Image (cartoon, rainbow, N blue to C red; front, side, top):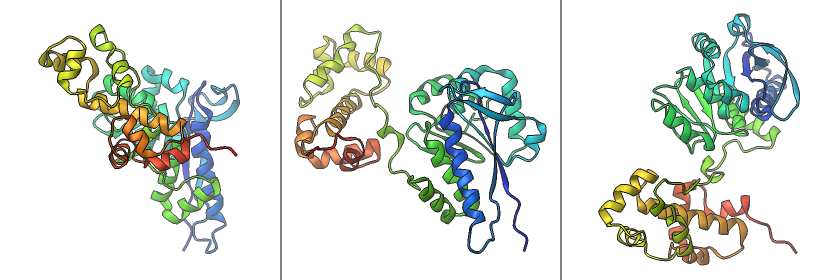
Length: 333
């Protein structure tokens, strides 16, 4: 039985693009190709042919100043493309309103088997309307802004990668490798994907979502001066019982008026706001101290270590102990 022909993977990048957004998936697919050629049974043959492309072709200077050579993404290349991935970076973000690129992407969407993005490569896909009505993700810093501009897209801001039909999107930067591993598994099964992960020395399936890398409270900014100081007040007194009535009293408002103004300013409830501040404080303690979990829990207003474990895992999809091992300061002798 003849071996199937290799699938052509095209990674589209831009001048001022992020090199790792493109290079991470590229190396994963290249490793899959090498491993499939060396398989003992020889059944897979060549798994992939990978192309780094741009609209114009030729040499591009990436955002870190490194020049790279690219193929031109034209009808001839698209005709043999199985999967098109749009890599992110400043150049991709700048292309969010590029009408000519949008036409090219819509044309590609009608030809390729799979279409996807890495990190902010979802900007031009969103601008082209290709994510409307779909679930998607992207870098945690940009999902909120994109969700406001493109309300028809259902963003899953914590996901490492998301598949909706034949559209695949990934979180920021190195998550492009996670996406490539998922695509390899979809094509050739979990064994090859696992071997690629081993070769690249990465997790085959990353534990937790991208919220473990992001800040839950990105800012306390609000146009309401009365509410602007709440964050600082809660941080100073994390163990207090911050009911709506107490928060309202602290800013000189009635509970009813406070609840309405708070929702308009922060887009969340007071209870969720306080919980997020406590979680950020607990996360900082895990990163910066060697205090026992129970002590951190009491200091940050969770009462017990078990409550903190449960709330931390719900928010970050990783246990506090695992988070500390990954991001905490290591003890020195």
